Image: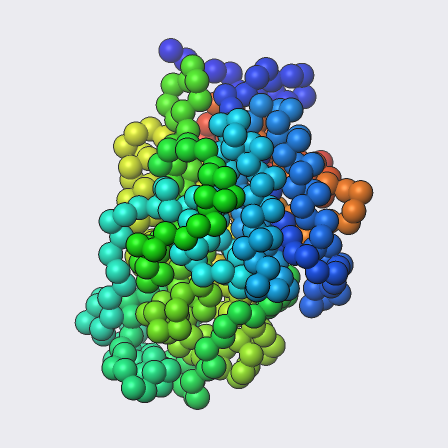
Length: 450
């Protein structure tokens, strides 16, 4: 049977999509007065709940299958003793969808982790229901990492430098380089640039500034969500997961992969966790001259991503991602990949990039099943198509949307076409897969045609 003819948007309505889903990012609701970002951009903290309510009403009227929430549902300026109560108020807005059988799937952002530890967020946001249960606890030891280094690198010097960094963070505990660290430290890093100085101060709940530089189970009620489970230790919390969606009456299905951009980071883990120590050592190695690791001052180009309000995927999660992509391919599933942090440099300022974006892109671009990535964090609309034909969309942030406007979207999914219907500050896009898998960009401003 011949494949269906390529839709031509200009010819008129395309008919009903296979399915439709909602998207939103960086609500950053807080019960504090409005403020400004580091760059002076206005932020409307109390308005986030109203804009989320408007989005929910729009999604209800447009027959969506699920919602993808791209992180930072709370703001870091929130008083910590109010975090749980404010989170419950946000989840109550989404529960309107949950009671109708429309799930919301969440990613964690830095502002989420400024408020609460990840194990509690995982439970409150329903992530624990979907997270893989077989992920190994991160191991340590130089013998586990030397194989990750390119052969041309003088590995013993770099391993020694990184081990010194980690040892200096906890002098009473014998700590060596963790397996998650080397992949970041060697990227774009010559030994001459890898200066080792004093150990950084471990950052705790900082407001930072992110504009600088399974199954479709319904969302649980806020009351249930905010009751922590005592058997879930913080050390073993996993915040990445996937789910499958098979539209009714359609052949094949989609797999949506929700990554944790802060699995290796300064945020959300106990101070003694290997991921925290690896992140601290990495920041001291790549951002050695700023005592405040939230600052990118003095860093240039893509090195500006090495700040404490971003983070890394890590080897453990990368291995899981590779398995997920292989499974999707074997099942003839198409794939959408989501993370709070963007993966493609041309879609956001350098200080907003994932630390190990290159490793993630290598996996995604090698898998023809991947069609779209979604991210937030930068608060600015971003869009590009990479050389393999993957569409990369960064959503505008709700928190920087003035009262009277809106900021959310709906994505219509067709067999060879995706339409992003942006509302308010979110830009609309036409994303259409060519037979050769490549993509082109339409001349019209704000419209992209694959």
